[in-house]
Each structure stands twice: as structure tokens, then as C-alpha cells.
Image 1 (cartoon, rainbow, N blue to C red):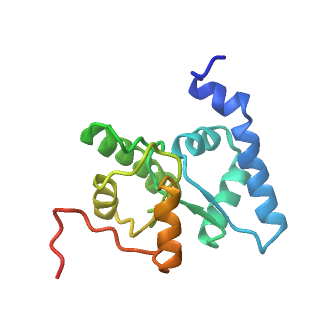
Image 2 (cartoon, one colour):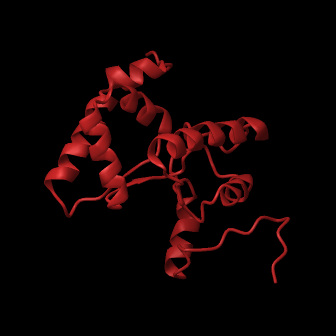
Image 3 (tube, helix red, strand yellow):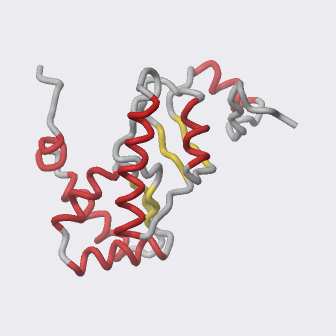
Length: 164
């Protein structure tokens, strides 16, 4: 089975374009709905093909806080082994597009599918203005312990941070 797929395959072959169109349509139709989007690269591709009406609808939904852009990086990067500067470049490219085209600065990171989490990420994210992070890959035992202790919301302190 082929597991390597191109960006174009993911965007066109898996109908990411249609997903974004359907999200905009559904949010317009049902005012109680909200949605988040985290892959800036796919959003940029959709944006480049969207007509003026759909671009305006997307901007309005963002302004109404019914569509939230999370993370802001070009893609959700791996956190286990990436080179620091590649992570920074990834963040810069994505956030520049969002700022220029949508006047958006994400405040929440959506990191649910990396291969683990690195203490480098909350540090870099905080430098870019992000102050909340949703993470997905933690051990079931740790997650259950945190749930029992009502600690699923926590402040992630890096080993080099000074705690006062």
C-alpha cells in the first residue's frame, strides 16, 4: 500500500477543497455552529481558488469568531525530531499568509497528531502570540491521572523557565 501522498493528492484527491467549501456553507446556514481549521497550507490553496464571495464569507466567519484558525503554521509539524529552524520557518510562512490575507493572528494551537510533544513547542508558540494549546498524544495512563486530578488544563513550563 502506498503511504506517501503528495500535497496535491491530499488537497484534490481527498476533497479538502470541498471540505472547506462545505464548512463555509454550513457555518453560513447554521449560526450556532463553530469550526476550527489548522492547516494553513490547505487554506492557502483553497483561498487561491476561491471566488471573491467565498473569500468575503470566510473573512466574515472569522470576524464573527465562528471559524477559528488555530496554530497558524504552514503545516502541523512533527515535534519529536525537527530542526529548530525548520519549525520556525514553518510558523513564519503560515502566519505571514494568515496576517496578510485574513488579518488573523492565531491564539490557540491545535496539535493533535504529532509523534509526541516537545517542550520546545509551547515556548516557540508563546513567542508567536499563542497562549493556548490543545495536545492529543499523551499516554492513556497520564491522561486518566490528569483527568482524575482535574489537571487536564495545565500551564506547560519548560525546564529552562524560571517559576516564581
